[in-house]
Length: 273
Image (cartoon, rainbow, N blue to C red; front, side):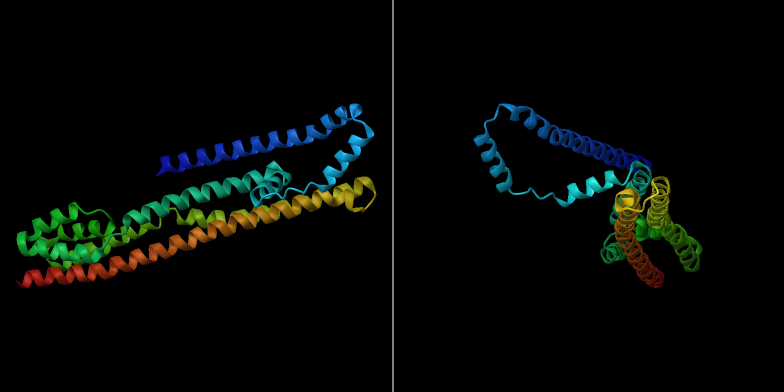
């Protein structure tokens, strides 16, 4: 689990670094283009200048994609709080992906498993049923296997073992979910803190300049708003993953409870036979 989280974190960090580097290269190229055009303009005749001006006006403005706008605004927000918000998103997504993979692998067809156990009990008894459970992955099979290990002590002990080990398995399913909720709460709080700091910077600029013109306070207010926006975006993304994971856990727990009751009934019928 830790290796998976570390690997996903490194991949996301490298991808983010490469995209920022590409954006910086593109910005330098765009800023150098007018200078080269101005230097070359000395050798252009007036008629050619008019043609170039008309072509420039007629050329349609290239609309930036949402990804480009989002990346530009992220850079404008400053590396301080934006970097922390990005780390919250990276670690939150890493834990969410790990939980989704784990829960997906824990899901099995319990109805088919119960039928296989019942058939194994009729053919080979408890040992044959244990063999079926050993060949089946997932927490439900582990719970049933723990119950069969107490079969010689009576059906009451089997039921106690199923309930006790079921609580342990439920705790394993919920592992790491509290960290996701922490990042959901932390991201907007960091955004709001950046907002407060940005407003303080804006008022400091007003005090230093002795003027309240929009130019003086624009940078501080922009940083304040951008940190809040990105903090809320991170919280919304992680909240979606969190709700899906919680619903998946609830579905698995309900399935375990229902199948455990059916498992005890199968064992009681086998004892009567």
